[in-house]
Image 1 (tube, rainbow, N blue to C red):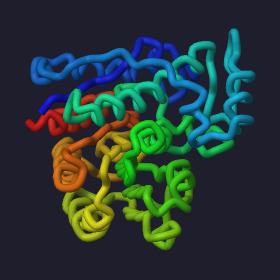
Image 2 (image 1 turned 90 degrees about the vertical axis):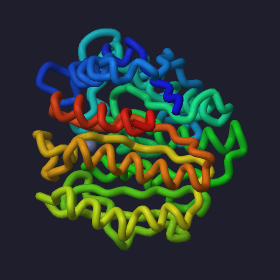
Image 3 (image 1 turned 60 degrees about the vertical axis):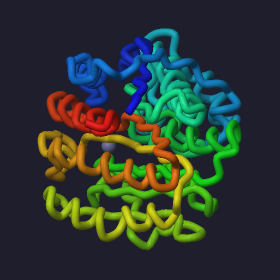
Length: 310
Ligand SMILES: [Zn+2]
């Protein structure tokens, strides 16, 4: 398996404040883990900048303009009640996040690699059409899915999200489109409050698997095997995108679930089996959350090892 890893130094220069959990140290921990000999066969690429055309696949032009206008030349500026903060480096970082996801789609659809992992930050799955939320400015997973359709004519795109939080922004972007699938497992009740089982989209194209605080490996695998994986298989995606958050890791200080590194390896393998069967294996994974530096590093390592077929 050939795996591409997209990243960019600009993603380290989003600095939302010394006490903010979404710190540059997160990405450094992931990059350090992926420099280990285990990952020597992966091919590294620089994340390009997103275009405005890509951003407006999901976001309103007014919102995109307002993010550009609010980008501070010094100091910090909050885009919401205080979770989502821009520093002078944030605008380039979020443009690299979206650029990486779209470039990953381009490369995988062109057959340059089997799959791609976007080692970028901040996360994107809470960002809605017209608002920043939960550390997220632009929704790179949802944009990448729509980019695949517009740029490459890929018909059916699935995003599967195993971050501990529900991706309300991705669900919103996909809700009314039967050819876009969003499947999420997430802690519930928990931030952001969406992701109930009865939120099923216009054609059963949204599948939510709420997990109670304390959910362990066995329960996680049982629920995914019973609910999300069969629905994804029935959808028959032509391209699979993963919103790969690692804040469901048992070491995570924000999340309350008990996933292990093996669980991240397992779910990645299970998702790739579906991609193999209907999407010629085409998969793009995007880093979302994960706030234990150790759990993030080992969880992401297990995930990328699975992407590489190991
Ligand atoms: Zn999260």
